[in-house]
Length: 203
Image (cartoon, rainbow, N blue to C red; front, side, top):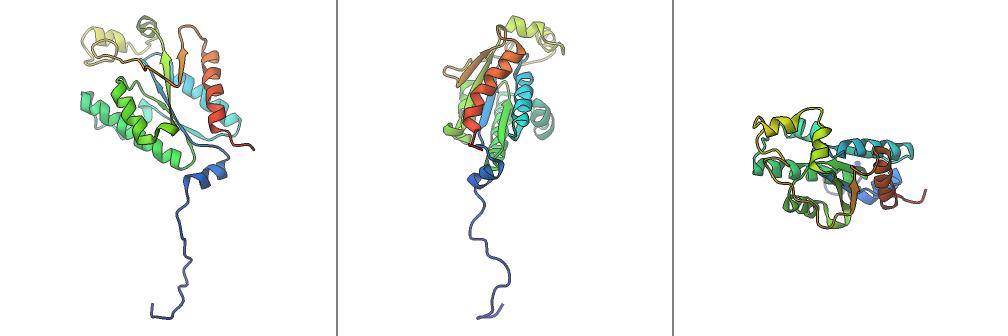
């Protein structure tokens, strides 16, 4: 285009920001990170909370083993470094959802405090809420329809958290839910009531 010619294409002086998308969706976007042993109830609670949020007009996305470990991260094994990469990738994807104004609800064992802190650092402390889904190992084993704990105890599954690999409990979680004491419904309501003030924009 020669000098003096007018640019016929529109000029966009800035990218849309997260706040623009939050206003469109009428919600604040955050990352809710559920941690706890396999069988503690993370995904069950997340599914219930997502449904309650949806019924109130909030848009959220659950990230868990089904859509991260079994799909996006299917190239990873269960070594210490691969487990770290699984969580780091999940945190990065959560950040993308958050930047789109969407509430990300993550369900990962994420067994070490260091790896959860790394995820928090990536997402930003002000946007990251660590939720400890606390349930004793013996109860998690009784709930295990997939027989994962049985296979881990027999040596069929190596490096299984709670059996042959340690789980480090959160020291100062944003919220703790004891699923050996609370019913599923009460657990869902407790998390929902925690989330709602964080995501609500007066409508």
